[in-house]
Image (cartoon, one colour):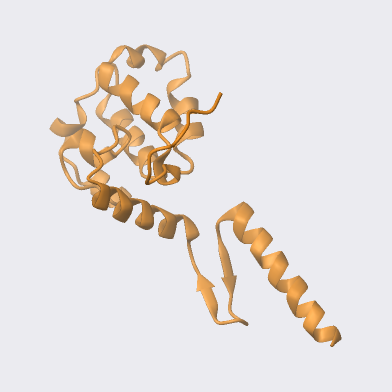
Length: 153
């Protein structure tokens, strides 16, 4: 009976870790989730495709016009496509696109990168403003699939 309580405690600890770190591996219970963030992203992409939602401005593929899934895709882009942002060099645009590939880290990464005095002038570009606004304010996978019945006060 004691072992059963210990098992429940271990399961609760793993759930706590899962919720707060989005990464868990529980081999003992045949539940292996290597990257919960990737699973949430996959569900969000499937739901967005079903709803016919427009592509996000924070989607790096929509900015460039190519399908970008990994950092390697960004690295192999021709430099002519990276010069689309005014005020950013090709290497800085590559860094911004790479940051956009990490949805849960993109907000602090973008704010830290574009918030320096050397790069804050790049925010004069409308596309880069749209990227930053979308990264900060779009609900992403937390967007409801139904319309709200009442507007909160």
